[in-house]
Image 1 (cartoon, each protein chain N blue to C red):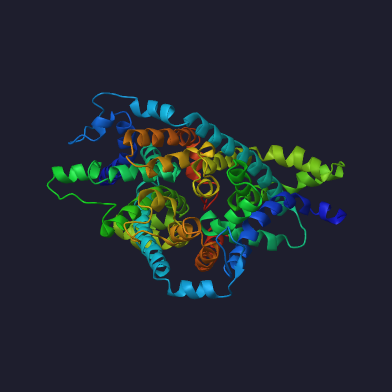
Image 2 (image 1 turned 30 degrees about the vertical axis):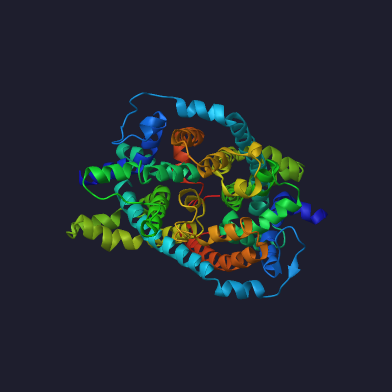
Length: 266
Length: 289
């Protein structure tokens, strides 16, 4: 009983920011600044949402974000599957060295390498381009780790019997490994999409023209302006969490289990 | 070439290209750039160890490391205890646990920009929900994000909020892996629930404890987004963590070489943490890849 009460109280505290944001996003700007604050919107208003479509190029930001998230995800899945197969089932010289080097970089994220990353992206002419958000992000050590762990469990006999039947390496990969990895592909796609949708640092250093903004970047830049219209900011914050919410509700179990024992962000 | 194909190395090549260009080269470049002075416009100038010399006496760099450590040392224990408590409370596979796990995990899924924005709104001095509750119960108004004493505490709060659900899941996995027989034996010996937890369950969670401590340390230590959104490092330098300081040096002051030297020091610290993390991870899964 005490256990349940503590859990419920904590859950309410954890949910307050989200519910308060959602409720406030439907208030008029006047009501938002009202004291004492109303809990439920007195005059239910779509002002904030309408202004987002009117005052900023929301559809473009949405398109940019979706484009980056979807294209990155496709490439990420391909890269994870190929390197996963190579490291899990290959026996070439330096395999362990390669695995360990990649694993050591699990924690070396954009926060740490942003300066040289910026220099490289600039050198490659990818500044202010959506490809500048895609190409540097499509290889992920986390996804690689997950793929290797998954593919280790594919029985070697399957691969060997295909080999005896005269299949080429590519055919083995394409006709046996990929179909057997469907659950892995699903998990990688969902995780990769969320990572890219939520990403902030890469857009922050790569993009400075507003026509290439992603939604996260737009949300951040809205707050940098003078005289922040909080109802717009809150409406945009709500819109930016909707895809994550849908994906989370659909694939809750997958997320709760994590991509692996100690799943990592990025 | 033939032998490579047979050995499946060829399947590593696409990833390897991206790994080298966007992970390996940047690390090498941090070291190279840190010996140069460069503002992106004029040509690079070799300056030897000068950046490091300046860094060594840069009070705001040391301050940023101090803030990063303080931020981490505050966030990690709170996250640890809260997620351990929730993990212990929600480890059963009943309906209640399953539903409530989602409530705590959800903040981890939310984009940090949106999460930071929500909290910034909640904590704002004049219109924030927290302060209006404070007024109503007779407490003074608090400038959560503008007062140097409270600003760091506020970002710690949000970091804990985002991370707890994820760490809770690690604890649940760890708890579910503990054999039940040990508990039954202790109950027969007359142990109460709290004794049972601290004397038997907690010590058996050793691997999970280490994993949670190291992962949350790594996350908190490199946090950038929450601080950038909520305080942009202010007031003054009160919440300027090292990644934010590096960002400002590179992209506001255009001191690329100097920011690289700072990155190098930061990289070394993260490197040490990640070596520990990988060790913990391999003990946890009993498996190195």
